[in-house]
Length: 394
Ligand code: SAH
Image (cartoon, rainbow, N blue to C red; front, side):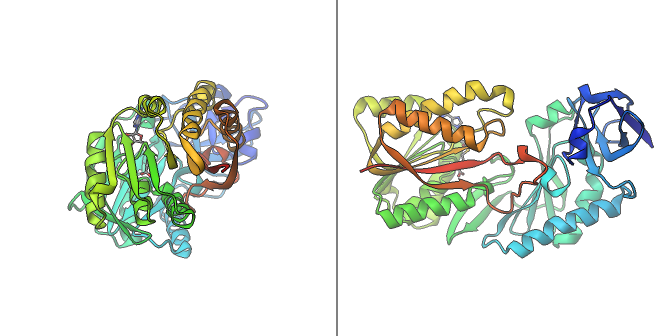
């Protein structure tokens, strides 16, 4: 077993059970990609077992802080079994569930989503890449699902020096599937869609949107960064009179149209714009358009804290435009999925957007990722998704 010796004082985060060791913390030691290493402090005391990533700034990701733990097939099977058992206890009322959420489930870099009896996995680090076959076999056995599709085409793979890989890893079948949540049917494609095919993390927020539209009787909605129209279906099913959905992905909008039909919703109640959100918001403002509800769910603008400042300006501008386009009494559902923007900062950004927009508004509710996307207390970076429901005062 190879050892990785840390520099003096660089053992603090591992003592707090944070799973990452950065390259700058390492005094000496090397290993192959994904190889299990013993991480030790400057005196040689055991800190953790981890997986080595030779090309990444995150040089080691911890598997275990228990010196007695063996990192073998049984370890992966047991860790996966715990993650799956948690989801069973959560009893999520959908056939689309995140079974494994990376670091927070003790498996850094691994994402596994289940859509019906199809599993979709992303192997985002050298560690899980090395154990791919073990993990795939255990997943099939533990879930009873006959098929597993690999979507290892994430940007994190490049940082790890790993090639992009997609395709069936176990079994095969159709990639066009149907998700059922909150009584709605949502078509998706695990091979062609974003991430593993769908944004399961926004499940509870789509329901919140539905409920606000229904309870407040909100009429006209603008769904920005709509992807395949999850919020669009939510609002129309809640009684919205009309929803305008904007996304820069043509195929996503095609799927959104199909999703309306799947739910028997009248296409006359929807407009789909293949356009840039920023430009569209400015145009609507110039045209004097207003809406009763607006969703702003942009892609990750600040992947890390280093990007936070620039991203903060972009978020502020989006929210300023969104608040201006809101009718008095209307509701903005605004999100950030940037790990680099914390809850507090996001709150501040939206507050200063409100000031700049010159509107009086109040937070009605805070939103976050669904519970099958847990955040380990030791891994605050895992809490990437935050949202606010903001009402423009009547
Ligand atoms: N709200 C969606 C998920 C949104 S993901 C849901 O609940 O399913 C972000 C989306 O923003 C992606 O679909 C992407 O195609 C789109 N996008 C990214 N940049 C954009 C831009 N500048 N203008 C319009 N859409 C954009």
